[in-house]
Every structure is written in structure tokens, then in C-alpha cells.
Length: 334
Image (tube, rainbow, N blue to C red; front, side, top):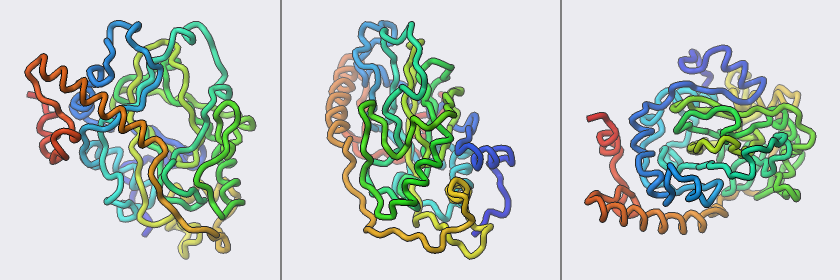
């Protein structure tokens, strides 16, 4: 069903998504939720926030200890997510339906404080999704979402995107209906599907604490260098569709903005003859084992801190899942 009235995305934002594949939703997360999920981040890391010599890793993907439903965590963001996909009825509520404290940290390194680098040379340009077979119509990783847990200024570790690379990904997936579980990488770690050496439009994503940035699942992106060494904290919660994207809808007005973007990049109005030629698969993420190790390390640090302070270990890995109403109550100001 087509969206009759957009309540969260402005006409300018819808145009921007169709042209460039991304939008920013400002003030999308109440600060109390961000503060609740962030309050013990440095304890979990085992670093001193005031002593850079303790920052022994440049980038860390932290595991999740707490979560609440996405529509509660970010009502504005959830509304925009649904509108990008043609309505809430197209979103799978049983998979990845929550946001949590799985922080992605960029602390930078001394090596890059006085150096510059062109975005094309960052390496590790990729699209998300290491747990399913990628097809042109895949709805498994229906959107890439970045939640800003602190202000991010230029040269302080913001994610880089390459909007003109979406067409390369669309073209490759269109020409490979057999799909791919993963993509070959070059010596710099760049995914071949991105064709990053032929991209010229690079955008550094910056914003304020509580902003959410949404971009198309076929958007090439890469972590940047945190030249300023101002700690950067984000999360990257996924969203999944109930059904694959549909590029042959009877009513053109029923195409989602995300589907329209693919058709636009391919120069088509529909794809009546395009079909996948191999089975859809989901599998255990390749990063799972590393996350399991970090869970054990973080829980140990949380336990040690709790013993010293007389506090409690607030983690689903110790206490089991906590009802989201409790998380919300704990997040509210006293």
C-alpha cells in the first residue's frame, strides 16, 4: 500500500534520499536513552576517558547489554524508517526490532593526528550484511542506520559514504541474480561490489548527539580516521523487511523510496523479468565469535566495578532480558 501522507520525511528529505541515498533525522533519540546506554561505556572498554595512553585500540565494536524497541528508542527515526520502506506493515517486527548499547567506538590514533587522507584511500569500503546472501531485492539489511551517541564534527571519526557508488552496487547485483554470500576484497580491504576507485562523491557524516542518519543498504561506506581523537560513539542497528523488495509492483505509486532508488540507479521503471537464481540463505555472522569474546571481557569489567562500588551489573548476559519498560524507567531523569 502506498503512503498517503508522509508525517516524518519532508519533501526535501525524500528528494535527497532519491538523489543521494541518505537522510539525517535530527533530535531523533531522547537524551535520557542515550545517557542510559552510555553511562558505563568506559568501564566496559576498560579505558580511562581522560588518559589517551590507555586507549590501546583505535576502533572497537562493542557487544549489546541492554535494549529497547526501536519505535520506543527513536519514534521520529522509526517513523522515517517506515516511510522509506512504504509503511510499517512492510517491516519485520520479529527480527532486529530493538536498539541497544552495542556501541561502535572510534578513538583515533596518534599516527593520524597530523596526517590527511583522501576518503577513497580509507580502505574497507563495503555494504553491510555478513549474515545473508545478497541479492538486488534483499530485504534482510533493508537500511543502514547510524545513531549518534555524541556530537561528531569533521575529522573526528564520522562515517564516510559514497553516494555515487550505489549505482555500482545496483548494477553488480542486477547482473548477478545468483547473489553472493560475500564479496571479494582488494588489498585495501575494499569490497569489489563498491567499485570505489570509480566513485567521486564522498560525504563525511557529522551531526549532534541524538541525530540518526539513514542510508540505503547499497550505499558504500567506510570508517574514517579520527584525526582529532575526540571519542566517537555510534550504534548501527539493522532493520529487516517481511518480504524482499519488489521491483514489479502493479501500481507504480506503491514502490517504496528504497525500491525507487534502485530502479532510478538502473535507469528502469520496473524489472518484470528479473528474478533470483539461487536460494535465499541466512547464516551466523562472521563477527559473532569476536563479539562473544568481548561479552566475556566486558562482563568481567562490569562485575569488578560493581564489587568496588557496591552497584549492580546491568547486562542481559547476567540478568537475562530486561523488560523494555524497566529500561525506560531507569532512563528517566530522577
